[in-house]
Image (cartoon, rainbow, N blue to C red; front, side, top):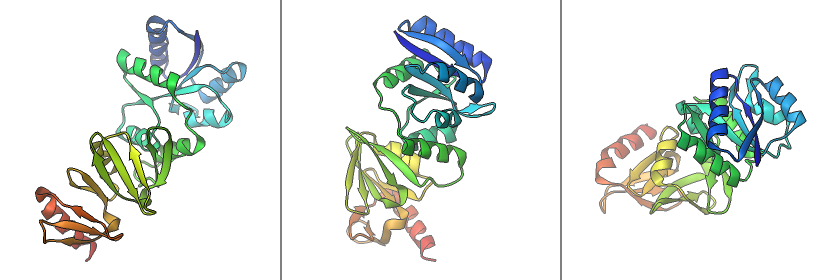
Length: 249
């Protein structure tokens, strides 16, 4: 039998989640609930559960405040957040799992299964999440990349380009490292499109700051500052030429 504590400031949402767990997840016992950082601190001092359902926004602070009070918390964390594009983006940058309100029974079941298997997010990944959530208009400095066996944190400015490899993505970094990530290029193209990255080809996503020139011969390609060449698709040529012209004005 696993134990759980729910930290959620909206009483209706708290009761719904508690009821869903008790009805559909008989192997989990909800041993306590809390609606604020202060209440959460009180219940967690008495008992640390196997799984902590943690809302991001609480009336007297945030879920991060709870984690800072208990830096050595051993509980598996399932973050709960409202359906908000900035919040979703922040979780993706930090490579941390979450469940969106309102959620389906399937969403909750998947989140619980992932929590049972997951390695706890380290302080650096939580820092990325906190920073990206608190500054939604700013370009994030770092991103967490989920490889087959670990999570690697890199600076966004160190990424030269991303290359599709079937349903996976290869990140090419300034220091010549290559990082193989088990998500599609489209996933990262959508995540990075507002941060000086552009998809120039079905198989290539490029950091605009790493482009040296657009070469019109041989079908058209980008020459990068590190000496590499990247093909440009026919439908992207006009857009790329306009972007490079703006960069060199």
